[in-house]
Amino acid sequence: MRIGVLTSGGDAPGMNAAIRAVVRTAIFNKVEVYGINRGFAGLLEGDITPFSVYSVADILQRGGTILRTSRSEFFATEAGVKQGAKVLEEYGIDHLIIIGGDGSMNGALALQKLGVSVVGIPGTIDNDLGFTDYTIGFDTAVTTALDAISKIRDTTYSHNRINVVQVMGRKCGDIALYSGLSGGAEALILPEVETDLDAICLRLLQGKDRGKLHSIVMLAEGCGNYRDYCVKIEEKTQVTTKGTNLGYIQRGGSPSNMDRNLASFMGYNAVLSIIKKETGTVMAQRCGSYLGIPIEEALAMPKIFRQDIYDMASVLSI
Ligand code: F6P
Image (cartoon, rainbow, N blue to C red; front, side):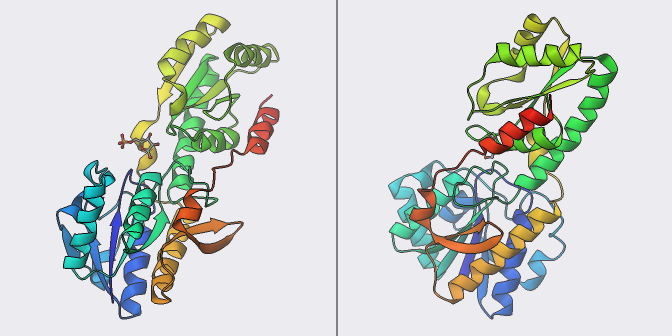
């Protein structure tokens, strides 16, 4: 039996831990394992190398992905998926493990529909997949954002200002939501909630009147640019408003304990499910348990917005 593994889409801290778990579990079970470089783009070009137990030494603590990654437009076409399946056949790869986000899991589904045996592992800092409580990389990204918020809070307090902190998340505001809760942000601007900037500004001014010396506004990138919000908020509140975009800092760095463990469980279980001939699934963590869910069913599960966390964050930051 021969397994291939690739990482695709935006990289996420913990992808290396998942690769390591896949390779070690395969080799332990006497299954050959091949690394496919640069995601689906590398698959289409046959950029494939055999992995040994040493290939994944000393990568558990490293951010990024040793396999590197890409976003392939051609693979998203019917011709692209067919070519991908053909390359796998040429290399004698019987099963493919795909580590990535939404687009990558849709690529997995397209391959499965052509009869390729696939297992998906959710790896994205966005935490935007409805079938799993957490995706690999999310916890590290939130921890990175939290560290930045704490630093920004220090200087915001000293200068008695407002600071808008922009984090990643186009359709899903989880990074802003979770780091905003743990960082004590005064306001959250998320794609899932309609923004009432007047109400936000009123809230910031009420806090100031009660003696608050700092105000942090967390902004998810899907809601617009922090610079525009800074201008509008300063106009409405007459308080100096600065802004910071955390950008790609959120995608790098050594993975947290949670991400390493999540990645290890998922990588290990992905290989075990292949050995048990239970493929066509994605790995998920739901309510503390690990399970495989049929890909199509998993992708149809809507991402549920945690209104309860949003409400709690609003109460705790009055
Ligand atoms: O999907 C992960 C993510 O980091 C998003 O949060 C962000 O919008 C996007 O990728 C950025 O993509 P790129 O690396 O192509 O600029």
